[in-house]
Amino acid sequence: MNTPGDFAIRARGLTKQFGELVAVNHLDLDVPTGQIYGFLGPNGSGKTTAIRLLCGLLKPSSGSAEVLGLDVPGATNELKPRIGYMTQKFSLYADLTVRENLEFIADIYALPRREKKTRIEELISEYDFHSQHKQLAGTLSGGQKQRLALACAVLHKPELLLLDEPTSAVDPRNRRDFWAQLFELADSGTTILVSTHYMDEAERCHRLAILDHGVKVADGAPVDLQSSTGMWVIEVLARSPRDASEALGALEQVVSVTQLGVRLRVLIPQDHKHPEQLVRECLEHKSIEASIERVPASLEDVFVATTLKPGKQQ
Image (tube, rainbow, N blue to C red; front, side, top):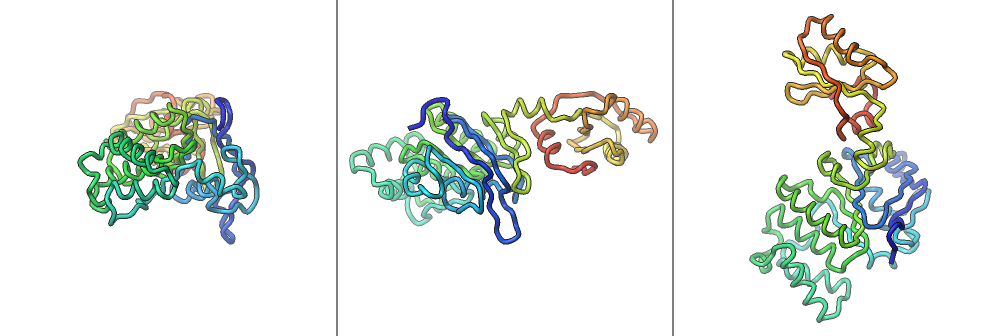
C-alpha cells in the first residue's frame, strides 16, 4: 500500500506507436496518491491510449511506467486486483440485472461469499439502486448505467481508479452527481486518473495534464495553469462580434480569438506590452464599437493557448 506523499503513477518517456502514428509521445507523468488527476484533450489526443498503457492493456513502444509500485506491463497480473477501470462505453452485460452484474464482477475478483453479499448491498445503497437492482442493465438510463459501471469498477475497493471519459454520454446533473462520488472516493484514499474533454470537469481535478496529439503540453494544478499561460486575455464586448473577430484574427500578434455569445476572448502573448491598446486601435481602425477589458485566464484559455497555432480562431 502506498503511503501519503507517494506517487501512484510515474511514467518516463512513455511512447506508443501504431505504424507511423505516434499516439502517445514521450509522456512524463507523476500522479500523487489520493488525488484526482485529469487528462484533458480532444478526441485523438492520446488520452485513451495513455490509460491503456498505464493499466497494462497495451505494451509501450518505448519508455517506462510504474503504477502502484509495479512496473507495467511486466507486472500486469499483480496490478489488476489493485486497480479499477471504467471505459468510455458501457461495457457491462445488458441482459443481466444490476445485481447480477455486481455479482459477476464480485466473482471475477473472487470475493468471499459473506464479503460479496455485504459489499453488493453497500453498493446498491451507496449508488441508489434500491428500486432498480432487479432491472436489466440494458434498460437503464445513461446516468444509471454510468453509476452501475462505477459501482462495478470500485466493487473490490481498488487503490487506483482509471476512468476513460466516463461522463461523455450523460447530462450535466448526472455529471455533477458522478463527480461528487469521485471526491468521496478520493477523500477515502483512492487515487483517480480521469480523462475528459469537458473544461468544467478538468477544473475539478487536483492536478491536470493537457494532451495534444499524444504530447503533454501542460501539467499542473488548474489554478496554476491559469496563472501561467504566457498570454494576456482581452475580453471584447462588441456590437458586431463577427466583424470584431475577423479584424482581430488578422493581427499577427493575436494567437486566438474565441467567441462566447456576444463576447470575444482574445489571446495575445505577454511579450506584447500593450495588449489593450493593440486591440483598441485595431477595432477603431475598422470603426467597430466595443468595450475592452483585460481578464484572468480561464482553463479554456489555457487549453487554447497550449494547443492552437498562432492566428487560429475558434
